Amino acid sequence: MPGQKRIRTEHRNIYYNVDTGKYDVKHNYKEFNASKQRNDYKSKWKYNIATLDEAKIVLKKMRMRKENEQHSGVTLQCALELWKNKAAAQGYSKITIANTDYYMKMLGEVMPLDTKICDITEEMYEYLFSKCREKYSDETIRTLNATFRKLVNLAYKKQLVLENPLARADNVKAKRTDKIRILTPEEWKRIDLYFCENDGEDLRYRLLFNLLYYTGIRIGECLALTRQDFEKMDMCVLGHEKQLVKTEAVQADMGNDRIQENKSQKMRLNISKTILQDGTLANRTKNKKNRKIPLTSTVIKLYLEDVQAQYGDNANRVFGGTYNMYASSLSAACKKIGIPHCSCHSFRHTFISNLMRKGVPLPVIEKVSGDTQKTIFERYSHMFDDDEQMVLDALTGL
Image (cartoon, rainbow, N blue to C red; front, side):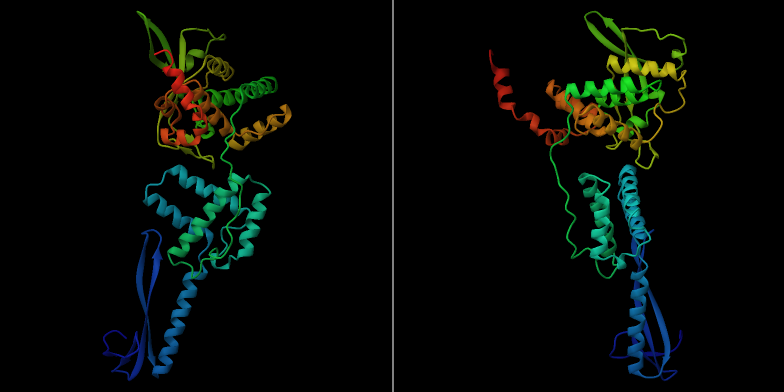
């Protein structure tokens, strides 16, 4: 007990108490503090043990009991919260953190997040992803597997579990394809015609897919759009030059019963936020880059028709619903018109590919897409296969 005189024995953490004539043992241990992202070091005593042999047994039991307490209660949810704290401390984007949360909820439909990590076996891991294969694509399987493994590995690294249950488990196999889906002009015309004929009075499906095709914005960025994000530009002719002058966002001036078509009017999108997969709003884009994208006359016409149909309601977002709602509608359309499946992100690939085919410089593509030139070059390198011929064509006649 405190204040009593003790003498160290030859056995670590076992002391002889001079005042009582018995033995005291001290167990030192550490507990991981998730909020502070560090280990807290603590100790616990047991007093008045009659013999040295008994003291050895008591100390061993204390160690085993504490290890069981520390490692048996750590769940997948605990590991997720630990990773989220770490990610926030290291400056990960809100989008990355929200996506990890969303992926774990998907996995939680098969393996509850209150599952203890120490109880996970190779068989449970294999069963988890066999069920996921019934619902998700290979690309999604790879993402889910990477998410699951990084949380389990983190718990082991922080010594919250004694063993890594995935250490000897075979990694989940999922086909990887480097080929990205790019729509042909004919495929796009058929998709647009389908929604033109099947939208009924709701123009927003067709408007949404036209925005994705002609601007290359991500589906989350599209769902986050408000009326104020559509900026009206006036085309002024100064001498022989044309200059875009920003006016106000397209708002209540659409309150007339009839839309006045102005051929000199131009519009552009202001992209600064996104809707995450869980439906929450993030006030920044995936790459933390705000950007402005000019709109084609086709998109402007569809948008102005939508404004008129909405009676100038500028306060709400342009598009209601969820990503899955539009993705399912697109998938169904592809089946009905008889073209290969494409996702909402396929429009982004198509947009960037179209710009590259037209010879738009990489810095300009970077500016409107939000991707870096390095990413663009690596992802669309197949479009540079004939670069030698392009050089020869450019030099011909010089």
